[in-house]
Length: 100
Image 1: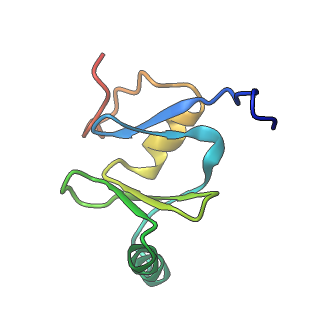
Image 2 (image 1 turned 30 degrees about the vertical axis):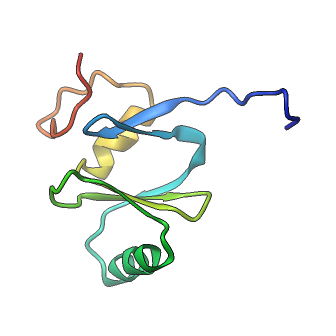
């Protein structure tokens, strides 16, 4: 991509007004396994952890193409559904939903 070009980026809401660029996300994973906990700690130590939980329980881990690890209080299924364009998700998992 040349300097003058801009990539059209679609932002996906991940809770509490936080957004990620959809084309930068590699995986959305549940944080319950030990390897994911280790990955989270390694990212924290390397300065690559982005905490978007606002102090809530971590329910999903997003792995980005830049090696950043983003943690969110929204269920992985809810975030995944927002990638499909169903942003008017009215599920029981409404923690941190974008204002409408």
